[in-house]
Length: 127
Image 1 (tube, rainbow, N blue to C red):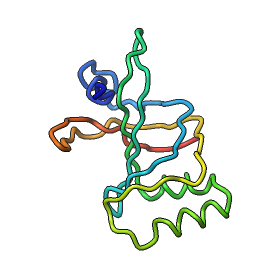
Image 2 (image 1 turned 90 degrees about the vertical axis):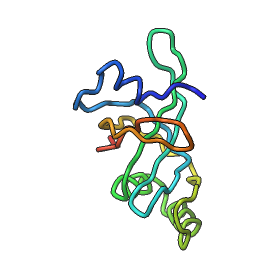
Image 3 (image 1 turned 60 degrees about the vertical axis):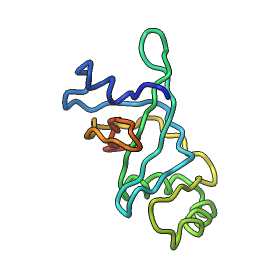
């Protein structure tokens, strides 16, 4: 498994309450963790050597609606039909990837899932 970017940020004190900006993020897969929390995972190059790190982006319903608003009405309907009635946790794919130019985040709280520790970045806004 690749090193976690959130843990790397914490260890190097890079995100000390400062917003973190990610550029050109392509959303295509969403995990519904609870009714109020979604997450998506990426592998991204980081650092001078471009080592691949795991990036976890958490977001709420407001950001989900903003992402869905970037889809065509037909794709929005298709996605809503797919997820309607499912109980979290579950995984869903967007009908078409959504490219977001800028994603502004804050470093979240350390978590442990299946013996793996990580720190998600919590999305604050999209541009």
